[in-house]
Length: 216
Image (cartoon, rainbow, N blue to C red; front, side, top):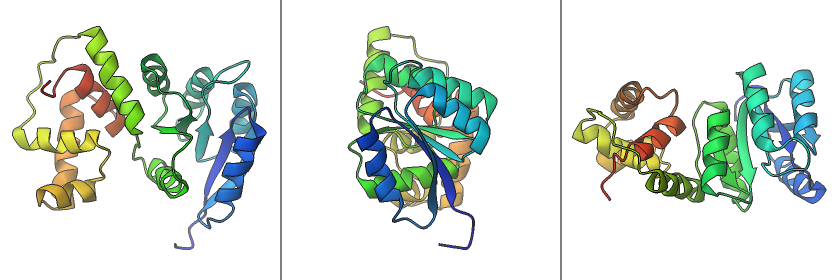
């Protein structure tokens, strides 16, 4: 890694064992620094006000103020702070609610350590990560709601890129898959975001599923 300052994170979970496990893992990584821990949504908000971290690893189900409310408050107060949902649950309503609250990524607690570190770095760089369980939950939500298809005009190439975005691939990985340059993929992603009126990749994926853009 470079000499850049490490990514500063806060862990929010009401289980001390979970916090300790993540703390131990992160202590072995040079470019990620744990600057605070919280056992509730209320404490998480206070710590974000005081410490101004880059990333918050946020549990969703906690006593008192839960992760969704805390995520919404943190994102409203501090737009530069990225919240990663890190939870054991991926039911339809929870996934949709936390993404709408402002979380940039959604991971399960059994995520392998190296994937967690990668997701933290991606979130810091403005890239989203969705666990497969979360993506499936969004699809189930769409099927249940049976919402009409949007009037979009994505090209065949943009649809191919969007399909790989749903699978969680980065621009570089998508470029390798369809034999185009990363710059070309970046252009396609920007066009997809504009057409779907999405602010980031996670929202684009959610909207594409919501609008039934993929064949059944």
